[in-house]
Every structure is written in C-alpha cells, then in structure tokens.
Length: 345
Image (cartoon, rainbow, N blue to C red):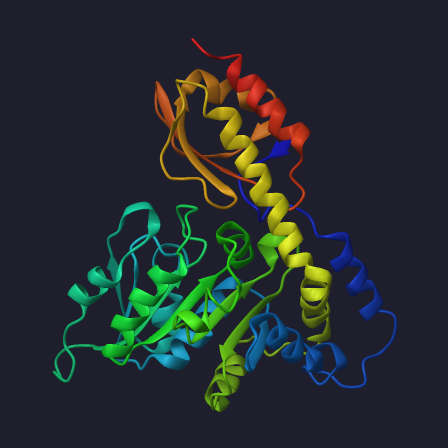
C-alpha cells in the first residue's frame, strides 16, 4: 500500500527518531522543560527567523493554535479566519472553548485564501457592548486548499488588522512547505509581514508528535504559561518534544523534508496534467493536490494499492486529495501516474 491520503500517515524522519533515542539515553537533570533541549530551542528559532522569539513546545497542532488564540482573544472577542480554516472546521470548537466563548467569523475566498479587503468588510462591532469585539485574525499557511499566501498578501491582511487593533496569528501546520513553495525567508512570511505569532508545525513534516508556538519579539506571555498548564500541554518529559524539534531545525531538516514533499507534488501534478479526464481544482503550490477524476480511475488506483482521500465520491467522477510527504518517492508517484494514464477512456 502507498498512502497519499495525508502527511499524518507517514513515519518519523530517521534524524528525529535518532534524536529521541539519544534523549532517552540517560535521566534529564530536570523535568517540565528545564532541560538542555528545551533551553536551546529559542536560540535556534531566533536564528531561523532573524529576530527575538518566545517559544512553547506542545504536542498537537490544535494546541499550537488554540493556546495563542485564547491568549490573544478575550471571551467576548472575534476571530476572523477563512471558512475552510482548520480552526473553523476540524478542531471541534477548541478555539471557542479555550478562549471562553470567542466567536469565529469565517471569511470567503478563492483557493483557501481571503484578502485584506474581505477582512476589512467583515470587521464590525468595535466599541458596541452588544457585539463581540474584533480581536484577532488567523491565516492558514499552507492553506487548506494547498495554496500559499505571499508576503504582499499577508501584509495587506496585516495592515487591515493593525488598523483595527487586531493581532495576527498564522496556523503553520505546513509552514515548511510554504517556505519552500514561495522561496521566501521564514521572516518574510511572518513577522516582517505583520504576523504576531506562528503555530510552527513539525508533525506533518517528519516529527513523531511535536509543534511549536512562536511569538515574535519578547511579549509578556505569563498568562499563556498558565493556559498551557491548564490545557494539559505542560509536558513532564518535555525533552522528548524538544529533542524532536531540535533535530527538525538542525541542518535544515525541516526545509529538506518539505522540499521532498513539494517536489513530489510537483512531479505528480506534471504527470497528471496531461490526462484530459483529470481536472485540477486548486493550483499546486506546496505538497497537496486537489483534483477530480473518473470513478473508474479511482477504483483502478485503489485496486493497485494506493490510498488517498476521496473527498466527494461520485457515480461518474470523484473529488480527491493527494498529499505528498517527506518520504514520498518518485517510484510511487510515477506508478500512480502510469496507472491513471492506463484508465484514459
């Protein structure tokens, strides 16, 4: 079986597994993050982003999103996001729960992205006691459509946000794929474009289970420390999270893994683009492809041992999602294309 359903179904990068084994060799001097791996994370992240940072390792992408969102948004606040954003569709109301009741306002936009103008049009209620108060905007990078925000697009959104005293959060579960896909620096895609806090993903790109909340600058985040404990993400053996993240950042592993995933997505797109019965739904800009194909082609590919997400099954055509990972191979991609071509009617 070759599984293109998600980058969550893959294993762990050998470098990260080795780092965890080394972290397991002996007792740590202290627990709950008072260890050499966690101590060194801030400097590594600051070097990558070219600025001071405050970081918090957590174990899940949901936690990496909702902890900063709840910290920056009061219970009576409003969070603006794309209608397909993970915080809106796939986190079971976690942002609302952890913030104590903040309201998410989903925004429309083609190919998983909204604009500064659509954000401006949606903001209302400032200073009116009977309305929730505009507080934060959340961007997803890479988007749920597999597309990418460029720095100028982020800046346009952040400009509207700052004019309305909103903080800017970025859900970067696939941030590495965005850095590679845009060929921009991490700084240009975040704080230089107006982002205040990033949920920096690692699990989808080779980690066993580790994410990083990154605040740019040195804000007073004492309350977030309390929220992390109360939310169950103050991990006693945090060195195993931090060891994963250290290995992820060392020697540009995070970018090398994303280059492989993005490269295989580009190869898949090039191979499938010549098949007239396949239609692409979104531009292929990172490691995810959305396309429609004949039902007979879906069946043939699954019979050949490929797994992928059939988002909207149909009697004649289906909408499918293909996700490439850090260990997706040319051989598997080429075999997928070969079998798809064999089903041209």
